[in-house]
Length: 259
Image 1 (cartoon, rainbow, N blue to C red):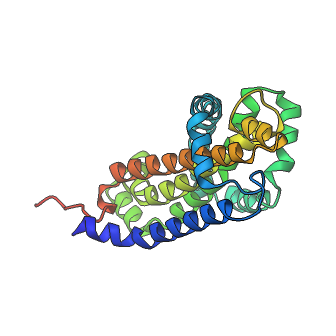
Image 2 (image 1 turned 30 degrees about the horizontal axis):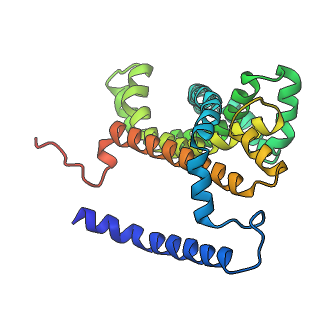
């Protein structure tokens, strides 16, 4: 029954995707639109297969920035969110700045990072960390604000120290918010790495896309976009899997152990 329910949930999206791709294929093959404007999906699949090794090579360079950048955001965001939760002054001072920072496009900040840290892996890692930092921090701050104060008072009545309260009350309560923010950050991380590569890099999916664009190889550009989408979805599913493992009580198929 669960499999049938899942299939029913994704069936409308699958039908829509098939209709869009089918219409796209017909329009590309039976119209006068040049292939460098709108290549057929079948041509994109062939380009993806023919250049698979090259795309895999560039994906490795992109992931070399994604993983440490995302990891850096995962380390810093909880620390800053906890600081803002513990001290009202820091929350009042930093929260508005975090919101205002999102009004500044990453394209405006990225050149400054390149000027300060040069061309190489480090600026790309920092750009990814900046892109991932906001959704993680904001979600964690909101999560900390939703912690049940009565549970904290109960732990304090039982003379629990701050570390035990954090581990037993704050952590379980904020995990859903953490993984919710991490899903967004994971999908943004590939985009952040590509933005860094667009500005200055020797290899990576961003460089591959720029070269394809400048050569009017639209079919290769679409192939690279597919790879970016696949990588983003893979990271999203990995975070979702990690969330299910860390929070089994959130799963619909979870069965509470009998007492």
